[in-house]
Image (cartoon, rainbow, N blue to C red; front, side, top):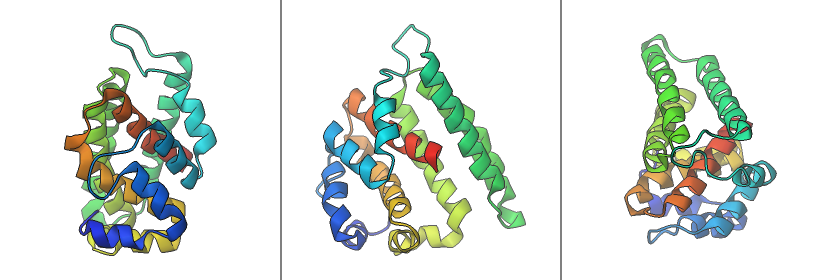
Amino acid sequence: MLHCPDRVNAALPGEYKEIAEALFPPQGGAGGLEEAIAFAGALDIEGDYRKLLTLGELRPVGSIPGTEMLRFLHSFQNNLDLLIEKTWVEKTDEFRKDKLLERVPGLIAMIENADYGGALKEFAGMLEELSWLLFGEQSRKEDFIEYALRIDVPMGLFWWYGGQISRVLAELKDRAFIRIILLLGLCYLTDF
């Protein structure tokens, strides 16, 4: 999904470039909560994202997730399942859809168990597959982000975000920030 970071970042529209690069700077690392909220605004999900952040930990060790968080995860899973199931693909790619659908419950389980690092890594891999299902070979081309931005800027920013996760995953050590980054993508797909 992300082949040439410099070219991809150059493709970001000027009014979004600063917000995007504040979240995931080109030189590495990542921003913080304020940058994630600003990015959520660029994705047109700021209100829902702020509400999601107020739900607190997905599952503090040894406890059960709150009712609101369980509802959110249920909505996320339903929306993602529906998106995957309703995506038309060539007969030869049907197995990809099935495999991706099989991964969703495992992602949900990691989130429920507060394994945010594992969940973010799994989520990044799932986004690679989802981009293939939605866009086919175009998702692997150098100009994919430019292409997605032309279709819809928030959607293009979301796919940019997906590519950045893989780029910075090894650098992310702060559990709270990993959770913030994960919730950003979950919230977008829940509202997709």
